[in-house]
Structure formats: structure tokens, C-alpha cells
Amino acid sequence: MTNDKKTSVLIGSLGAVVAIVTILFVWLYSSQSDLIEQAYKVNTELKNANEQLKLENEQIQLNNEFMVLDNQFQAIENQAVKIVVNDSITAEYEQAKKKIEELRKELKTEKNKSAKRIKELQGEIETLKGILRHYVAQIDTLSKENAGLRAENEEIKNINTELASQMGLVTQEKKVLEERMELAEKLNVTGVTFSALKKNGKNEKKITKAKQLKVMFTIPQNNSTPVGVKNLYLRIITPEGTLLGGVGSFKFENTTLQYTASKQIEYGGEEINDISIYWDVNTALNPGEYLVEIFTDGYRLASRRYMMKK
Image (cartoon, rainbow, N blue to C red; front, side):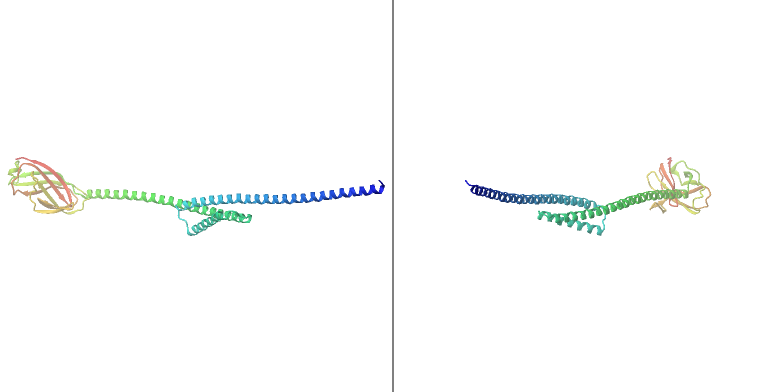
């Protein structure tokens, strides 16, 4: 083989190799580009899936925060029922509560949210949290004010109770003093005696033969008793329970009593001895226990029982 032929064969072989290499290079380059493109596509899909998963997680967290926020509002609302809340605070609370309901509905109806919308919702949650903190602070302030008012009312109630108790004591003491004054003004009688008399005025031992009955007593000195004319009323009750006499009547403790005999005296505050009241016997008298009572100025001065013989 000549040199020219060898050269031609070598050149042809080299050309074939170059062609094969070129074909391989083109094939490898093309395959690599496809791989790169596929890898980029897969990476993009993974990134999008990751972003979507992140958004879903943030959406779940957002929904949980709404639930917590709603529970907090509900707890505050229950607390607010116990105190007086002004209209502006109530309106602010109702508006925030309505906003929570709207956002929760949005989360339920639209499952997939963009990152922008998620961020907007998070911002709205922070705003609602701020409203909640303000509402809690207002409620706490009102609670403290109401607690102070309750304590003040309780103190006033205790003071009123104490004053009422003191007034009751004063009223009772006044009543006691009035009763004491009334008793102090009352005339007293001492040495009350009851006797049957004969026609000549001497004592008669037998009540059945008495012509006259006599009650005698002493009125001691009493500077508290108003001076002036005193009407003394005598009541004599027989053993049978019958009032002797019954010639007139007088007032005593919201009632009217008949009396046996009466006597008028002038009382100047000094002691008066041997005051006698007589009753002329005009009916048959029986032996037994006789009741003698003396009254004046609406008081019963004496009530004595005497056993009279036959």
C-alpha cells in the first residue's frame, strides 16, 4: 500500500472517530440538558410543595390562634356580664368578635392561601390580640372599680347597720328613760288599810254588820310628780267578784273602769297622811277576800287583798 493510500485511510478513520465523538458529545449534551431541565422542574415542584405545605401549616396555626382568641373573648365576655361595661368597650368587643367570625369562615371556605394572604391574616390576628389586650385591661379596670364600689357599699351597709343598731339602742334607752320618768312622776301610796265601820264610825269586826267601808292611806313626798288637783278613784271588789258602788267611771289603759268612790285632793309635792275614802254600805256584804284598788292620773297606785270576817 502506498503512502497516499495509507494517509487517506488514516484521515478517513480519524474523520469517522471525530464524527462518532461529535455524535456522542451531542447526545451527552442533549441528555445532560434534559436531566438538568428535569432536575430543575423537580426542584421547582418540591419547592412549591414545600411552600404549600408551609402555607398549610401556617394556615392550621392561624386557625388555632383564631380558636384561642375566640375562647379568650368568650371568657372575657362571661366575666364582663358580672360588671357594668360602657357602650364604647362593648361596641369595640362586638366588632372584633365579628371580625374573628369572618376570618374563621374564610379559613374554612378557602383552604389554600397565598403567602401574602397568610401574612395579612397574621397581621389581623395581631390587631385582634391588641384589641383583646385592651379589652382585658378595660375589664380589669372596671372589675377593680366595681370591687372598690362593692367594698365601699359593704362598708356603708355595715355603717348603716351599726347606725341602725345604735338608733335601736338609743330608742330603747329613750323608752326606758321615758318609762322611768313616767314611773318617777307616778304617785305612790303607803300604809293602805281597809276596815268596816259601825254607824258611829268605830271599827266593826263583822263585815256583815258594817254600815260603812273605809280605805285609808298615805301619799309620800314626790318632787317629780306634777303638782295640782288629783282625783283619787277607789274600787272595792267583793269575794263574789262584784264591784261595790259603780257611781262613775274613769279612763285606765285604753279602757273605762267603774269606781266605788272617789276623792279630790290638792297635791303640792309634800307628803299627805291619813287620806280616807268612805263608801256607805247599801247592800248585803259577805265574809271573804275583798280586793281594794286605788287609781289616779291613769295609774294604779295600789292593789291589796283583805280577808274580812263574818
